[in-house]
Amino acid sequence: MPVTWYFDFISMFSWLQWQSIRELATRREVSLRPFLFGALLKQMDQRGPAEIERKREFTYRYAQWRARKAGIPLRFPPTHPFNPLPALRLCIAAGNTVDAVGAIFEWIWAHGRAADTAEALEPLAASLGIADVRAALAAPEVKAQLQAHFEEAMRRRVFGVPTLAIGDELFWGADAHAFAMDYLAHPDMFAEGEMARLGALPVGLSRI
Image 1 (cartoon, rainbow, N blue to C red):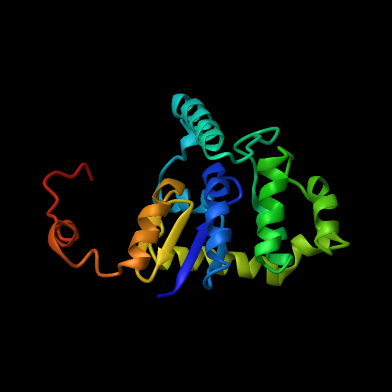
Image 2 (tube, rainbow, N blue to C red):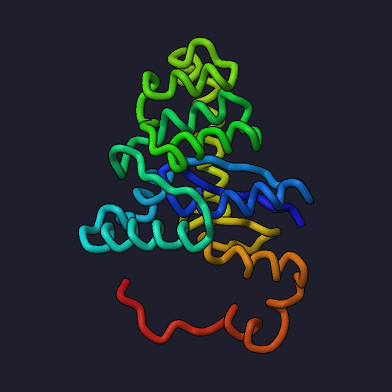
């Protein structure tokens, strides 16, 4: 089954799952799909966790706790939420490789550096072989590829980041990684018993 990872550099939980995704990519092909989480929220008419005051504080502390427990370095950038478009475009311009994705994640979340402008990303871009970062981020083909990732995520009905897609199934969140790996090893697990019944469970009450 094809495996695709949808993520945004704005998401600290994407960083927390990245360690597992990178390891998975050493064993099988994983398609990396950076896309703009804010555009997804707008499409779904929802607010992100960082846009809800008390949820924002909890989310940041929970992420820090998760990182500490997992032994993953986590230092928040100077501001959050921030505009992730420059980082997303840099990723595409640098080839959207495992090394490029890892370098950008580390820049933001391991070292706590700003990634919301071309100027802030200039040293990182140079290390990725991009001399003119402003031109790279403004390239029409880079913008088109990022938009294509977003449209693909919409077609697949991705509803959050990070999301690991295995075949037609979506596994949302860094904390669902073990669940996704179990499904990858046992792709028939949703076809039997209570798992199968849950796929067709009727809606008893809707607020829409």
